[in-house]
Amino acid sequence: MTTTVADDLRASVRGFLESAVPEAEVRRIADSPSGFDAALWGRLAGELGLTGLVVPEEHGGSRAGFAELGVVLEEMGWALLPAPFFSTVVLGAGALLLSGDAGAQAAHLPGIASGELRVAVGGMTGTPTCEAVAGSRGWLIDGTAEGVLDGATADLLLVFATCEGGTSLFAVRADAPGLSRRPLRTLDLTRRQAQVSLHATPATLIGSQGDGERIAAALLDRALAGQTAEQVGGAKRVLEMATEYARTRYQFGRAIGSFQAIKHRCADMLIDVSRMEVAAAAALAAVDADAPDLPVAARVASSFCGDAYFAAAAANIEVHGGIGFTWEHPAHLYYRRAKSAQLLFGSPAEHREALMTLLEAGRG
Picture: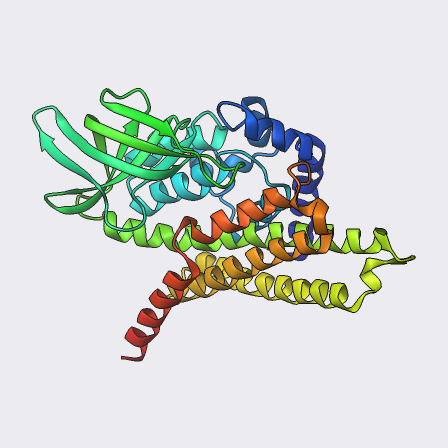
C-alpha cells in the first residue's frame, strides 16, 4: 500500500468518524441496549465499504490487505468506535477465509461485505468449552462460550468446539433452537461481550473436521495484529489529549506543559507511541506476507502495545489531574478500553511466555 493510498484512506475514515461519532455519540451508543447503532453500521458498510475490506471481490468485497485494515482499525481505536467491526470483519471474515470452506464463504462473506450480517466468534482462545456431536439430525453443540465479542447481537456465531475428530469450527444461526445469549457487564463500556450457551443447538461444520485448532491459532495471530493497530490509535488519542491539556491548562501563571514532570510524562508517551507504531506495522506486514514468523511478530507487538497503551492511558489521567478521574471526562473511556484490550486475547505476560516457547522451538 502506497503512502498516498494510506493517507487517503486514513483521511476518509477519520473525517467520517469525527463527524458521525463524536464523544457524545460514543457515549450514547455505548449506553444503548444493543451497544451499537444500526444506522451507523449501515453507513460504515455502504458509504465507506469498510465491512468488505478484506473480503474477496468475488464475494462483494475489495480484497484489501491487513495494512489497509490496520489503518481503519487505528482510526476506530482513535475514536473508540462502538460497533461490531472487529468481531465481524477481523474475527468472523477471518475465520471463514482461514477455513478454506468455499461453500461457507459463498454463504456468509457477501453478507459481511454488505453489512447485512454481523458475526461473533466463540471459543477461539484456550481449550474449547463446547462439544459437538454428529447425529441423524446433523451436528449438535452443547456448552458455553464466555466473553464472546458482540455475541449478544450477532446474526451468526462461529463456535470452536471439540468433537470426535478434534477441535472444529461450526456456524450457528442466531435464531437456532437451544441458543441463549447473556450480555456481560465488562470494564470497557464501548465494546460488548456476552456469554453464549448452547443446548443441543444445531450447527453446520465449517471447513474440515479436526481443523479447528489450526484455524483458531491462525485467527489469533491475525486478531493480535489487528488489535495492536487499534491500540496505536487509542494511544495516539490519549497523547493528543494530554499534550493539548498541558498546553492550555495554566497553574501559577504558566502552562503546566512547561513543568519538567509533565514534559517528561508526555515525552515518554510519545516514545512509546512511536515504538507501538513500529511493532504494529511489523505484525500487520507479517499477516499480509503470510510470514512464518507471524506468531512471533504478533506476540511481540501485542505484549508491547498492550502495556504501552495502558501506560499512556494512565499517564493521560495523571496529566489531567482531578478532572481526568471524573465520569464526564473521556480519559476514563480510553483507560477502560486500554485495560480491557490488554487482556482480551490473553495478557502481555501470557504472550511473552508464548513468545519464549516459539523462540525456543525455532532455535531447536
